Length: 395
Image 1: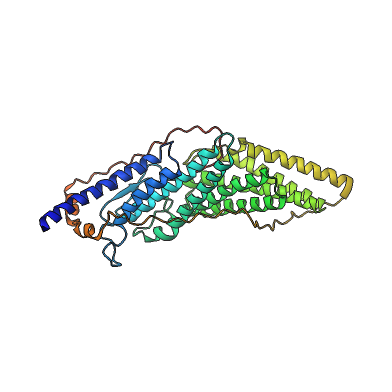
Image 2 (image 1 turned 45 degrees about the vertical axis):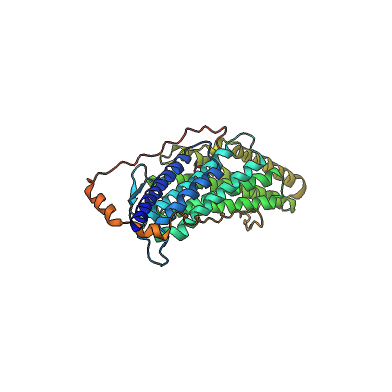
């Protein structure tokens, strides 16, 4: 009978709302669960996002806006703004905010894995993939879903396209750091290493420039990190370019390139100190104390001494006043974001259920509630002590 059908639908709607709340709570738990891996995270995100899509996608066969989209108010804090929340009564705001945190989780997972002693080849690939996957999420949100928000993101918030762009580019740069470590370990030619280092430095420079219009109090520390990484990889590029020039019997230019590598490295060291002393949101990495940082300093010094020695015995080239141009383009090893798409609408979200939702009841209930500003408490992350500091700021 119609009455029986209505009762069944009422129960079904109640179960759907319950599943949505449960899957959301589970996903939030996964962000701080140290046993969570990418497969567990994917299952949790697919479950929640497929249900949430029932409040966003059109379910009645038309192109009209889903009437459930603006039913619930959502609050989120931001990475650069402390515990001051932003709120929107929009399911897309919830979708984008939660997906943003999923991307951050993948970047943190990569940092945690890279922080292990004796990282295996398989683990290095997982680090590489997680960073590219995070970049893909940031890219998809910025290009497809953030423009759909009714209320544009406030300046400096996580959903500000500049912040989103910076995270995406930084994830690409850090993925390329994994590639550089690999090609050095396998002793690939110096030209490829120099080109990859140059491209990576350019990524960090691009990320830094993207933040230059944000307020210094929330962006200075992040920008210091990006700048020190830019100079560090420019030092790498000039160092290995100098090796290429020496192999081509251009000893004078090689010396000049190595001298420029020394300058870039010294600038990176100075920025490391500045970064540690700058107050701002986020944890403080110590890249200047890491093996990858100190190793480069020694390599530059040894290579420059070799070039000067060879020039004094063999070449007798004049060292040019101008620094050799780095017209380098990497043919291999460039990190590209992994394409990301949200899952399809859950099978639980049917047109029959959609037409049964009565928004007026929700509106009356909301009106009856006294207006009380709730504090949004930040999630407490586990105090993870990596076996070694990776120097990754996203962590």
